[in-house]
Image (cartoon, rainbow over all chains, first blue to last red):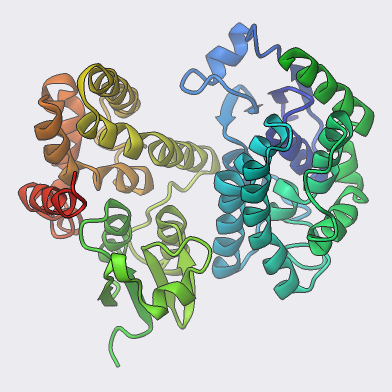
Length: 218
Length: 219
């Protein structure tokens, strides 16, 4: 029986990109359904009635929501390239850093972007990114998980790429590359992975999105 | 030395710490419990959780694991032989993770606001909190536990808030049982498990702690 895999999302959500990257890593064929978040489809509301958000993965009619939950599910169901570490302690560390990214780094960086680089917001983003920078320094490996990409890389490896698009739209620097050499290097390593490249929006597409977003705000 | 292989840095009224204590009890793991003085954080705590500087922290063979839900999953994977806490099939496991994550994102803030805000803001907060509880109640449905017949991860994530209900019901002047009787029935069912009843402090003790803490802070 062939699996039926659908992913409900939007091109410009980093949470959706994560799931695409995970699916790509495993070589899973899936149908991508582009949602209009201002006009959510009946299917999306049916599959994620509690949170009504993207991404939602629907596997043989069964929905799973929340990007980190989806990624662990993908890793458990489809063998092939491993995403989560096998060792329980390493797995806990990966889950911890993914949570730091979601709870601290991502909101802080988003605030810096949406505030058009307001000083306090940028300082807070820098503070959160410093944790990642330090951890990468300690690890000294190409990716967060070692020689191959894993959960944390999928979540935030391409941060500099993403923020770079917002910076281009805003015409300002939000994340000083010289302050974060490890994160910058990490981003380059990640976007050179085919699975990541295929999962991310194009740079032009992302810049266009931020241009529209900031145009709207004005 | 017995128990020194597993150390828990914790703070007795913490509903997050309680999750870990329940998981350790379910698995019958002996451990060294180290009560932390949170206003005056110990060097050990700061060393073991430099990012968040928070409890609970589980230290297993000298290595720290942080974040209560992550710790519970770690405990389940490391001590596999007894009392599985995660469902066995990937889809149900994903649902359990979703619900524990929902509890983490929604319950703490909504519960505390329902008691600490005033006037119209408080009424709004109470309404929001009850809505969240009704969603959780709906998920449990007619089942004994969140994911079915077995007590597990998602139940552990939520049940530790039960001993805190009295505090915010009193402050907010409302009854959770009145609004969500099935949820309270579920909580009482969980309390029949020794791991839960021996872990959760008495609700009145929690209330006294909270009121003392607020008065110290001048609230």
